Length: 297
Image (cartoon, rainbow, N blue to C red; front, side):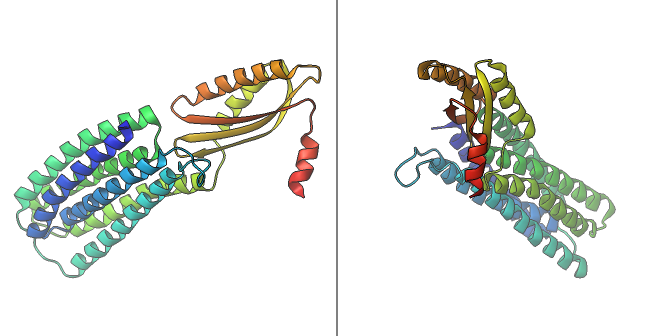
């Protein structure tokens, strides 16, 4: 089993444990902040289960129906996860506003503090693990999951602070006010995840810095007289690159292939944590103007 799938199974188990803990205390205490955290963990559980099946399908080999594989399931999962986070945040905002309009006192504050403290410790260990997996694999789904649980640490910390203040000051209005702050922060955290996933689904090019590094590699080989039509895109853990390289008309096809293979190996080393697919078209002369005209018409 791939380490990414193991990571989703672990995050699913942790989310399930946190849901049971927080939901029980949230209902008993009447705390909007704790209940909001419980709902967030419930959504974490749903998303982690979805991520597991998304990764399971994304790693399938290309076939007659999907010639380029199913790697775009990964950014699709990231967009769905970001959307789920945003929707849960809106629900939290609604519940907080209701409690502001109809105040009610919290109960079991001491137990709630203990539960939130334990949640922070457990989630912190999970984030460290997910970050290591994300850094090792470059997987977008795991990266989004790690970011999600990282926001949970901050929101859980804020809930813990609110519970402490309520316990000391008996000002129960702190709870819904903090719920509003948590909801806004969750939406703010979800937007980059959604944006990155959408850009990948739309086949956005690699960053300018990455493209410049590719150009430097091609420029470094004196056998290549010119190049054009450099196009790039990312799809989950896969990167696709196509380029037309121009050789002197006198070079043999065999030698041109050797140079192309060498260039491809160097480019792939730029993205060692990704699966890189390079289509290098070898031209005996610069036909960029002809290709540009064909693209127009």
